[in-house]
Length: 77
Image 1 (cartoon, one colour):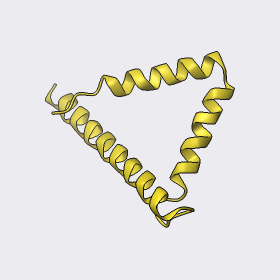
Image 2: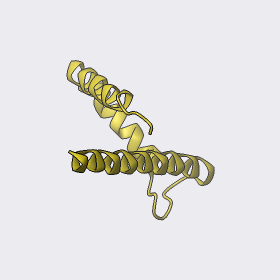
Image 3: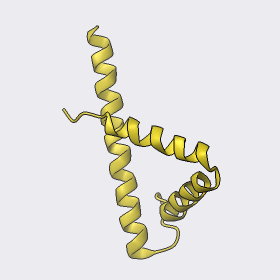
């Protein structure tokens, strides 16, 4: 059972790292604009993602609720 805890720790750490990189990409994109090497165009990708959720109607709202629920269930160790 310790293996499952170890895997959960790694997944949690990778998720945190991913969220930090997304936040960094947004800040760098806002400061420098356009497509940035390594980060790409993160702000345009996020806007397109939100736009696609908005066009999906009720299913987009449900998907957004599931995404928010998954991220709210994270626990920092």
